[in-house]
Image (cartoon, rainbow, N blue to C red):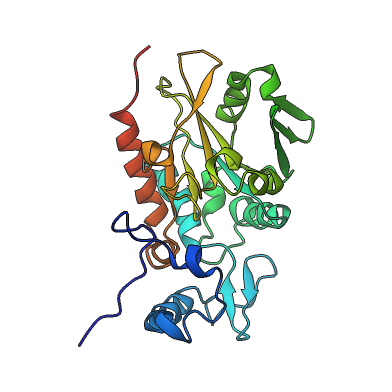
Length: 283
């Protein structure tokens, strides 16, 4: 009996390319052509995403699929990660970074789960004492730099990139920013137009980790723009390649594992923490 192979999120050689880069988005990928071999994988993971059948629908935490069935709108492994990190005694903050317009809905759903215990599978989240800032921020990028705006907060790289880094490093609880998709498109979806991520390799206290499905070890086609400081307390940065920071500050999310493995996000963060510890630079 042969097992269905799992799709790979990384190439196994320089001669390999993704199916998407060659053919674009194919709606019926698992119904015809070479993608049919993955049909069972899709069905198995959709089943794992099912909202518990013995529970009523939740207007914010569940969503009805095209098949009429209810599914988790936010991966349970995300909430498991919150519990795991807190149980390890880690001090952490989480900022959602999306090009989409659904950030306010995400933040409100997460607040209900985290502050009010509304998630039926994670009723004890309020014990973590985490707070969710439901004010959706915005990050605007141009050739002149980046500006972060959230409520009364306004910080710009025009005042120095170190100031933006310190602002993000001082974040508490959970929150989020909508990034600048148009800027990414103007830069042909390359690293230079990606969501900016400031990294200080000399910082012993704070580590920034970015998790995204579309992080790729191809700087011509990736979604995060890592900006690494050159000196301790300095303001100048350089663009780092994705491969340089892969599993250190950048995590290419494996959606199938994030669905099937409750501890997936926790393990990815632990790997990054271990790698970061061995890569901290001395000033």
